[in-house]
Image 1 (cartoon, each protein chain N blue to C red):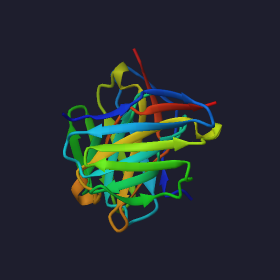
Image 2 (tube, helix red, strand yellow):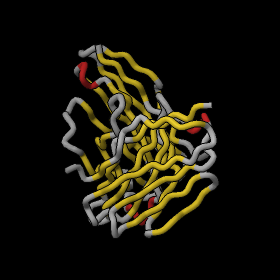
Image 3 (cartoon, chains in turn green, brown):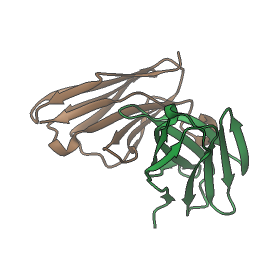
Image 4 (spheres, chains in turn blue, green):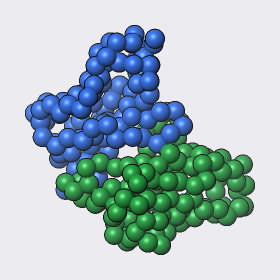
Length: 111
Length: 116
C-alpha cells in the first residue's frame, strides 16, 4: 500500500461544475497537507497549505482535512477551463521532515 | 520577488558532456530542493539544502552533484548522464526545512533535460 493514494484520473468536467479531488494516506504521522497545481511543462504551484482538520477556503478553492479518516480533499467551485491542470496532493511528516506527493489527478474543464 | 528562477529552460546534452543547472531565489528562503520529475509522475526528491548545508541526499547517483554557493543560489552539476536521466528537473525553496515553519514550497518552472 502506498503511503499516499490519489486517483490519477483523468477527470473531465463541464465549465461551472464543482470539482472534488481527494487523497488518502496511511501514515498518521503526516500532519501538514498541501495541494499543488501543475500546468503542462511548468513547475507545481502551491494552492493550499493546511495543518489542522477542518476546512480552509481561498477564493474558489476549499481544502478539507479529516485526520481521523486520513483523508484530504480539494474542492474547486465554478470551475473554469483555466483550471485544467494536474493537481498534486502532498503531505509532510514533521518527525522526519519527509514530504510525500500523491500521483496527481489530471483535470480537464471543458467550455 | 516571489519566484524561483531556473536556467536553462531546456538542455540537450550528450552522455559525455558536463553541464550545470542553476536555480535562484530572492525570497530569503533558507531551504532549497532539487526534484526530478518524469512525465505523468509526481516529483521525486533528490537533494535538500538547509541553511546552505546538504541535509538530504536521496541516494542519488554521483553523476548528479549539487552545490549551494550561497543562500540564494543552488546548482546541479551533471556529468556522464544516461538517457534515462532525461526528465524535468525542478528547483524549489521554502522558508525553512521544518514543515511547521515552511508553509509549503515555491517551485521553479524547471529545466527540461534531454540526454542523447
